[in-house]
Length: 357
Image (cartoon, rainbow, N blue to C red; front, side, top):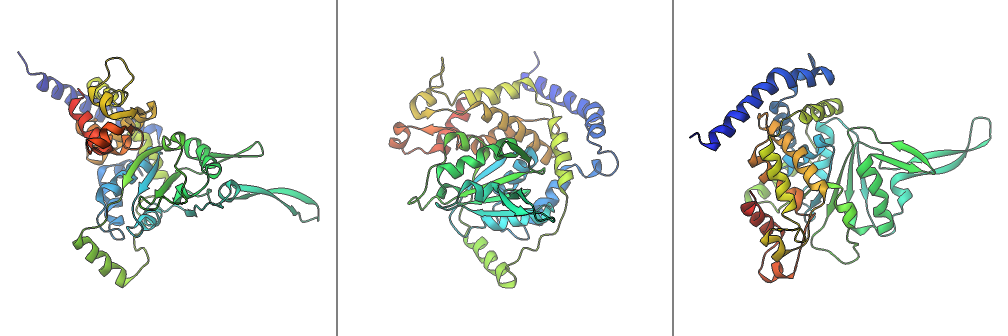
């Protein structure tokens, strides 16, 4: 009797061959990648992006990789970290490497929605007649740093919902679309909570990832000091352009996911819900609210890109497990039992991964 593991490997090998022979040429043709772009749509291109960012960012390899995945996927990222760990520098460096315009919005309690999206103003035309003109806000850029987003009032935070999900802004019943690729990286300070407004669940769900920017090690701290003694400016150079990112996005959509891996990912998302019939015992004991269906979409979309980054042409269980943490950590709420047992969200996700089949 053949081992089921061998059977799965045969299926994966067959899918890889099919992908090379049929899917890649088809996707290449549809995205106009043949010739100029297709040779560069490889893991090497993404590694070149990461290596260029390393000129400005010391350490934080997992954060950099997941931010690149989010940009290619067309998602947004919530970044948590103490001041000074390089959040702003990371976005500026990304803008230079991807050759895209960058805009920073400093969120404060007195920031109004029109300060973010823009507003209609009245001005004279060349003939002296008064007319209404739309004055674009700082949201009209490709890369947006929403710094300390939880310091803005709920009214201003809600102004970000439409643009983050649909990549458009509606002002006075007129729709203004964002230029693609469009990416929002919002930051939170985990230390200071005074004068902040917790993000609503609807907005939290708009972030494909929540990433944690850890404090650097002593060695990394020394390298940061050496780097900034030479120059405080970013030194990264353009590697790709916005169109290449969009082409990567189209190619990633074609990466196959076998049913067993897809079902595993969906079972993992469903395992976060304690209210479901036959709910996971871990969820019943430790979780108050589970992840939304967007978590399943984010998990598969990001896993396809992660597979490509590693030169693989099908999604593996490893891709799903690695991305479960950034996808789920802001979408589930743990209860008092978890706190009483000294477990955080990361611990609960780890337990779910061990229990899910």
